[in-house]
Length: 279
Ligand code: HEM
Image (cartoon, rainbow, N blue to C red; front, side, top):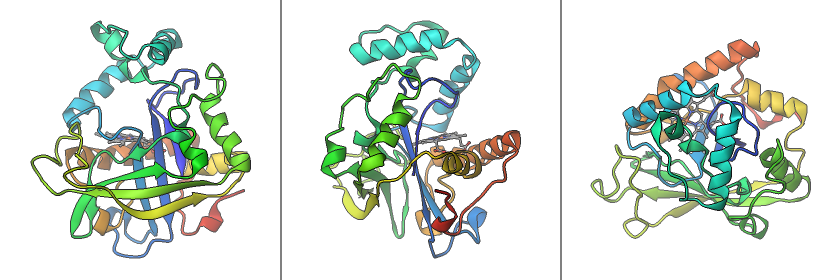
């Protein structure tokens, strides 16, 4: 599991942004997608919102282009927007291009382990298809729902909140799928529409348990952050990603991952066994 925050520029954790989560299941058997042939991994990539902020890939392109144009701006305006979000979610009028580029920074500094994580866009589920989400169920996780991280003004507060938890605690989540039961009211091509639980209630398909550990040792950080890559197209044919946003991710994740690995001069690794993960 790799917890993250977005957007992709390197910022202090005290600038609070949406939370992401990527899971790599290792040791998977079965027919893989052609781009992933011969591998034994299945990735799931989630955000902490049940819908995606952009309905379609071209909307995402517009917002990411805006963000890119302001990626090198100072941290100060991002910090202002982030702290306003922490006190008055709706209290800020954002006007003009520069302000619009800051919208992604409006997120309360909540603990990432109390959150539910959603693929937000669909994938095949064998003969069916649906959206997958990961729901905290152990009481030590549910107690963190909506709670702020400790020391939200510190540089590493999000990372530290996770590392501190796993020094002592075991965490349990349920993996659930919400199958599509109505193509009109549960659309594939518009990720901004919430799929109603009344139309199709989520089904629990797995339990994920994480034991206490040193979650961010230096060797593990290098392996996970700098050598692995998480990509919804690292997948079994039975879980093929669906829809225009997923198709747009096909080349984008590959290209970004290749460029990260070549800049850092790290070999790209796709594991075959959990034993490869350093302590
Ligand atoms: C057009 C749609 C999208 C594009 C082009 C896109 C692009 C990217 C790229 C280029 C990366 C960096 C990959 C790397 O360097 O390894 C990334 C990471 C990520 N994306 Fe997306 N994305 C899209 C939609 C989504 C959606 C719908 C979600 C979640 C529901 C999402 C969640 C994430 C997360 C959590 C990461 C970090 C993964 C990690 O831990 O390595 N993205 N995205």
